Length: 236
Image (cartoon, rainbow, N blue to C red; front, side, top):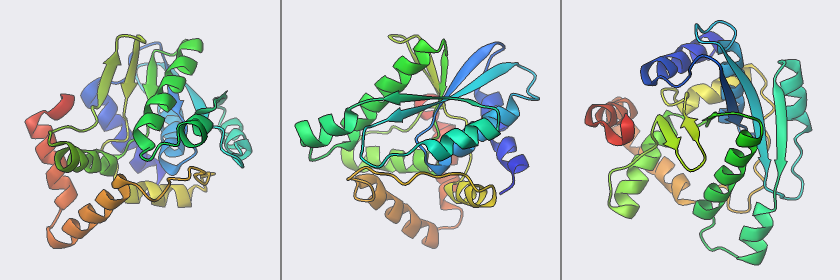
């Protein structure tokens, strides 16, 4: 996938859900994965021609895992004239060493988002862009249905009154496979996940389930996303 196509996906989501306003400072949560790096680059390019003027900055939340190296991401940001900030935390140590969580993902997500929102507030950013793609949305829908017995998924736009920050998800129309192709084509400096739980989660099992359904049912992911939109689930 080329940049122009990615920008068309992103602009569609931004326009449909009013994600960005004139004068916004948008902080992109940069995990080092393909999605957040693609989002950072896309929003930087979008800011150059979008009718509503906005600024983009990247924030990396360092969870404190041994071997985490953000140097390549720093170089990527500098090359593309994007400001980047690293928020250092002890989240990894707290979850795995102190609390020894058996199911660490939920708590880690909450703590990571808290650190990201705090960093965004310190930088004067009222919008925080997260790199959840179309596949993430569909996986969350089925995880909520199967494991929690409720109908829920990511919201395109979420206002957090306690922090006075709005979370936006501009990649929600982008298939994960397209982002993989984009990352390879543009040589994004994807950082290997150092989390001990990586690749061994409920989300990974749900990916396998959806992949299996997609082999049996034509345009399975598109139909599920369409159903989510028509039902207006969580602000869609």
